[in-house]
Structure formats: C-alpha cells, structure tokens
View 1 (cartoon, rainbow, N blue to C red):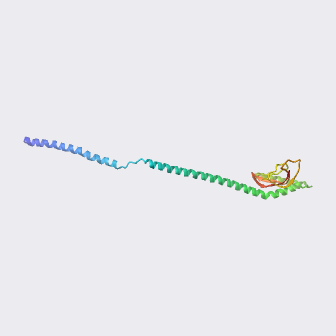
View 2: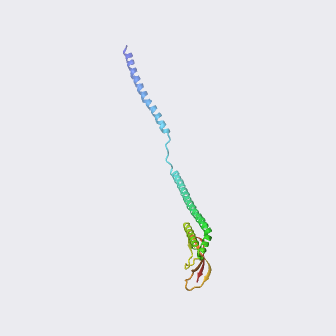
Length: 195
C-alpha cells in the first residue's frame, strides 16, 4: 500500500472516533431535555392567595358559629324538655293526691267522733296513719295549724275574728287542712283568721 492510502486508512478510524464522540456529545444533550420536560409539565400546587385564605377563614368561622348556636339550642331544648317533664309529673302527682283528699277528710272526722268501740277506733287510726304515709311518699305534706301566720297563697280565710290573745294575721281555727307537694298547693287550708 502506498503512503497515501495508508494515511487515508489511518485517518478513517480517527474521523470515525471523532464523529462518534460528537454524536455522543449531542445525544445526551437531546435526551436530557426529554427527561426534564415531564418535570416541568407537573403542575405545582400553588399556595392559596391571601384573599382566598381570608375567605376560607371567614367561612370556617361562620360554620363554627353556626355549630355553637345549634349546640346551644339543643342544650336549651333538652333542659326545657326535662323541666316540662318534671312539671307534668308533679301535676299528675298533685292531681292524684287531690282525688284522695276527701277520703282523708272523712277519716279525720271519724277520728274526731267519740266511739265506745275501741277496735273500730284502732282500725280507723291505722288506716289514717297508712294514708298519711302514702301522701308523704308522694312528696305531699299537710299544713294549716292553729297559730300559724296567715298566708293568702296557702290559706283560704272564710272567717275573721278579733282576739287580743292572738297576734295579727294569725290562724285562729282550722276547718280543713291544706296539702302541698313541693311548692305546689294541692288544696288551700280553710281557716279562721284573727285580727
């Protein structure tokens, strides 16, 4: 081979290596943007704007206020329902006890009358003590005794007497006992008032 051919042959490998090196340098450059491009396509979550944040805070505050109001209304409803239930129960007890008061009056009159039959008297006393026990279990109590101060909310004055031995506005005589359950008066005491 001649020198010229040999130089051409020797230069071909050098050119090929230069071309390959140039291709390798350009190839990574073309592939690199491809890998970076998808990263740029992913949308970044934007922080809410100050106006949006304020609006969301106002909405949250309004919802919280509504929740508190609803909770307070429910609590008031529950308390009101309990009070109504207790008042209804008290009214039913008072009405039931009031229906038996004429029996109490009859037993009291029977005890006030003198009798020679001791067994009869003992029987009426036992019935009366049992009756008082039942009224007490219902929460009832008798009131209206001679010497008590007159209370127009609890006493029904049917007579008036002037008596210097008694104080002013004092019960002088009781014609019929009064009854109450708690603060509720079932029956007013029928009394004679002094001064």
